[in-house]
Image (tube, rainbow, N blue to C red; front, top):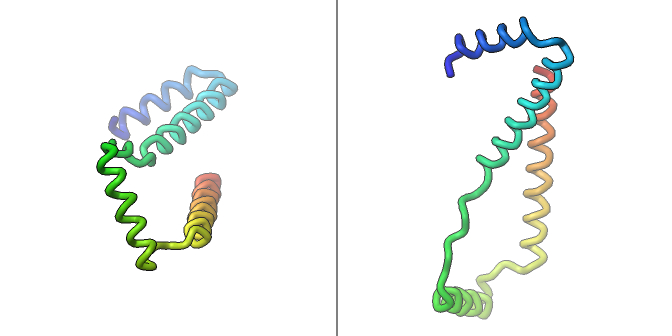
Amino acid sequence: MSTTALSGLRDYLCGTLPLADMIWLSGQLEEFARLRQAEEELPPPLPRFTMDEINSMLDRAEQQAKEGKSVPNDEVWRRMKERRRLKKEHTEQIEELSVAV
């Protein structure tokens, strides 16, 4: 939708809705936008594998573990926690910026 059309819609709503309804509608629009944004950030669905493919992957993983090419469990969890912390900080920064605007 064009900026002109959106501006016209905004002006129409502001001219016809009572203040309480405008505040309610703005909250609803913001919530809907956040939900849609979260949906768009979801990763694609995981592919389906046959049991033969899964067994083959497990065999390769076991061989890599024997060769010392795997990542220890504690390191995996440390990395996941760090990513979660960074994502939380990033989300908080975006929320602070959106409040400032």
